Length: 301
Image 1 (cartoon, rainbow, N blue to C red):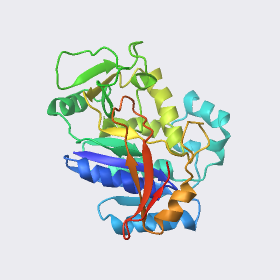
Image 2 (image 1 turned 60 degrees about the horizontal axis):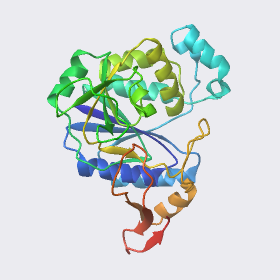
Image 3 (image 1 turned 180 degrees about the vertical axis):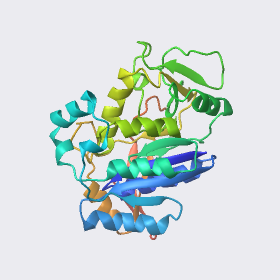
């Protein structure tokens, strides 16, 4: 049914926690692929631990490849980004082809993207009515595990059903920008084949440029107009650090090298979440690194 595609860079310890919570809360038939990269052998060792620990995810490491704009449709949209953003011209990664080949070859009808600095904290379910909308109106609907109508910033719903809620991404309804963002890598579900065709047309080289340019492309064409979510979200972002320099998002600045050093020595991350979660980004009440062999705890927050 679902193919989870997870993006990770230098954060094996955080990816471990995401996978653990995904297995704990999932009730849906699924496959899992991880597209990852590491800047050196120190971080690569963390992913080697993960590969031995989890048998189900299919791990694919990015490799060097000439990132050629001639491999995408020639249009103003792609040329403009290529000329404006120098990192696109310097990139030597096969991220785009890896991602699109996963989607092309997967047997699932739906794809959901995840990032390694997030967790699942509630039961993962999908209503048949949601699946029907995603499958029959492929260019109009997406479903969010990350958003929920318990959030105070939610816009007015478009339907009268009690079990699912829909809203218009392009209206001015709702106070939080998440409700106006028609494409996301944080727990949004899309019909596979239509998404594959859009991805092929957009020039990108990493998860950040993927989301940024896909949002622009989709908004310009008024695609994925409607979002769907349940009353209660199941997926939240835990911004404890950053591993990219394109956007300066707020984080707790707990460095990946600190976490990886302890991960290589049998420590895992343990969070205590706030009692009331009212936003899709959550800062934990406290955080420990716990040695799963000795139960030794190191307080981090």
